[in-house]
Length: 82
Image (cartoon, rainbow, N blue to C red; front, top):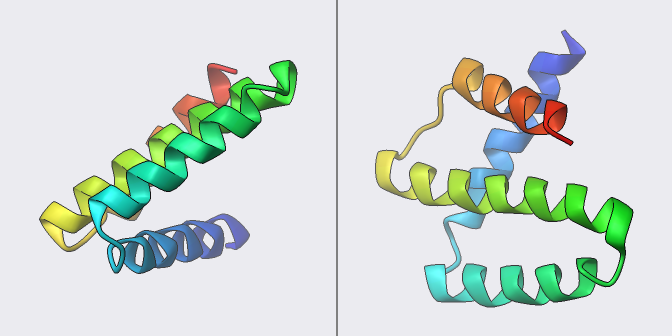
């Protein structure tokens, strides 16, 4: 399905993210948060999604894999909290 394809792309992006050091990821994340915090409504939603993405990169870095079903559940739970 299209959703499965989107999750596969997301996981591929996690793998790509592990090519960068944690310091680089954190520095970029900080910049993104600062920029998004200037946009109160959409910024909060995007910071939440970016936070989850950074957490997923860390988990992928440790486990060398990601479970698509778990990732999808976490993404949907995050979206429903908005």
